[in-house]
Image (cartoon, rainbow, N blue to C red; front, side):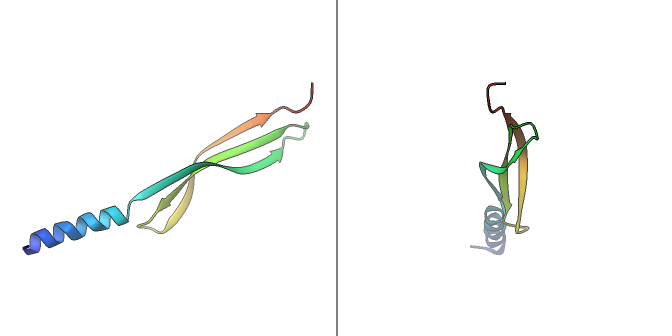
Length: 69
């Protein structure tokens, strides 16, 4: 292989290792809304291998009504 091929292979390897991966959705919080109901928060987790960071994304919130009211 010549130098250009090694550089191309090295660049492709770095891009593959440094790419982002996503997991979820996960329940990230359960709380009360003050009226006897539950508020459930879910989010996706994204890992950026290149930067070494983990972030939350696509956060959603759902209220579950409890009781017969």
